[in-house]
Length: 305
Image (cartoon, rainbow, N blue to C red; front, side, top):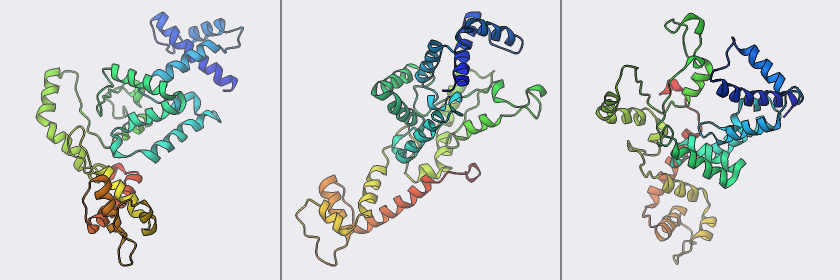
């Protein structure tokens, strides 16, 4: 990191300690007081403190609700700014519906790449011990002032709307359904609402979304879809007859002319995977999976839903 970035990181770390010790947030009113205290504290080091920087970055890595490669100070750094795009590239290459939750999987990838097995274990430990985060596929969001534009106009004006960063964050959940709980709602009402409307809520998610339909995911927390089987068929169908003959370990002779490769695939599936399928069904399954993969790889416009 450059000296300016190190100074900024040191100041961020010091700000956390300052707010905790003084039991107050840093605002415009006390900003000068904070800067004066910081300058006095790190005057000899010219605004750079190795221990505070290490403390701040270790805290960032240990947090399990956002990616540390997405840390704001990394954005303009020539080297560090490449970490997040590379992580996302790996995610896009390997992610499939059978991995269930993209948010969890991207954290696994990041933690493993940069912190190894120990990092993954630490992430799991933090995740399952957090009452806000341990439920698969369920989160909550309650906007605060920093999520809003038009703060000077007041909270009930037409200009008090979500800012761009918040819209970008919420848009990632286009495949979800939001539950809005007003301040006067009770816990019992919220639970009863979910119980009474559960089927409608799940139906809204699956019916609107091609992503789930293509993998035959039904309204239940985890349903064993046919994704793994269809992927196997698709991968085998991409191979030539010559390549399939090398893979086939059975006793039947498929080398004769006039025997199509779907017959070899059918034998491989039955003898090695206990899956019985006709040649025609194999062809259709491979075609469907190929089309569904194309759908999966293309970003969806929110207006299409």
